[in-house]
Image 1 (spheres, rainbow, N blue to C red):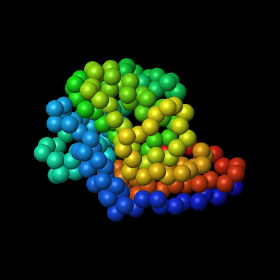
Image 2 (image 1 turned 90 degrees about the vertical axis):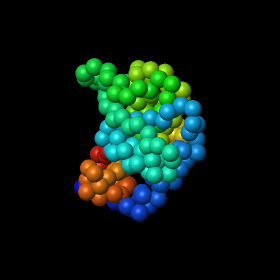
Image 3 (image 1 turned 135 degrees about the vertical axis):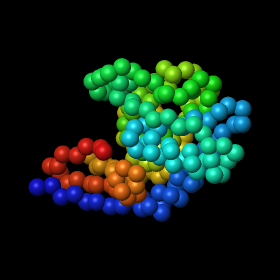
Image 4 (image 1 turned 180 degrees about the vertical axis):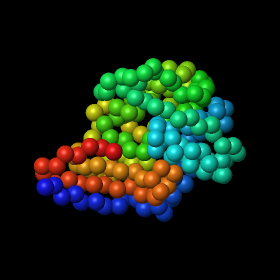
Length: 184
């Protein structure tokens, strides 16, 4: 029987501070000429994008537009189901920040980039992640990172958000030899 080691790497307060810092970093790298659009990858990335938009609205002159994105039809490592539907907002000529909870292999980020490009040609696409856990399979690097967390490939990283899970926290669940693990 496998034994799991669970550790909290971000609690609610640390997550709040990370999101506040990320909102400031996004504003610092945003020009005033092109509109800013946050595209959150379903499910938790879209929740994080909504939070970041509210924080950016508090700090900056305006709150950016937010869109939720299901990347499943754009993925290259899963069976495609349904039609490729780009984000529901205008991205052509905009500064787009793709928001996700965890960056692992880079395949979800690649799919999100493909989806954004299907909606039109943005002025720039940037990637923001709450957690970068390493183990990339593609040459993808985030522009904004809440926290870098070194993990073993078989570890799980679980992001829990108040809106979805009733609590704000990031956990790393390490598994001993012989257990089957998947990334959440």
